[in-house]
Image 1 (cartoon, rainbow, N blue to C red):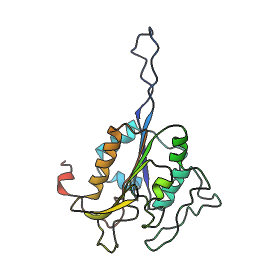
Image 2 (image 1 turned 90 degrees about the vertical axis):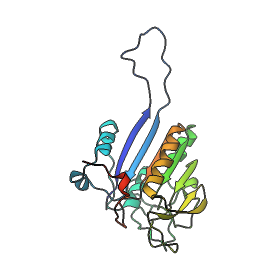
Image 3 (image 1 turned 90 degrees about the horizontal axis):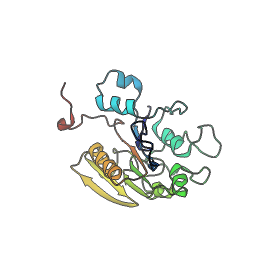
Image 4 (image 1 turned 180 degrees about the horizontal axis):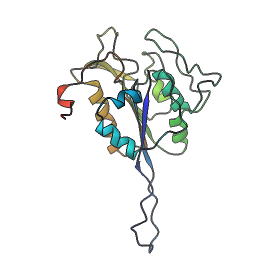
Length: 224
């Protein structure tokens, strides 16, 4: 179980190479999109055609000093807090089950969106959280995200028959049941909306390809 991350610079300082040096150029505020795929390793990408992911990788930023965990939740915890898994005071290796009461402490190290907020930058989290019990609906917002849309835990095993087409979606602490909508597509649309709203930092965490393993809708397949 591994997690693959992509970091994209949506905007930044303008290219001065083709500009006349007559007037000062206003610096553009950088905007970032961080995408993580749940339980995906490079070995899977080697045997799967992923042209869009290849393009994101080529145009994105490489994490050369970030090490993911063999488990998905600890990987997101490390990225959120910028902490090594061996740091005391944080059980980054804890596996969060549906019946677990563990929630990632947010007062030991400053979470990334809290740091960004102190610098006047807005942030939005979309998709999987799984750093707190399923019932802790406000945990992403307490971590500093101005907005959160997604499923706290995994889309399986819930009392409502949770799966990728029937899931409890949380929006800033409020939960509603979503039916007959594909979760991965729903997460993509929410993230795109935040990007188009020019949110400074958007973090999209996909539930897929985490179990239950399944075949995505046929209309999302790419013909060879």
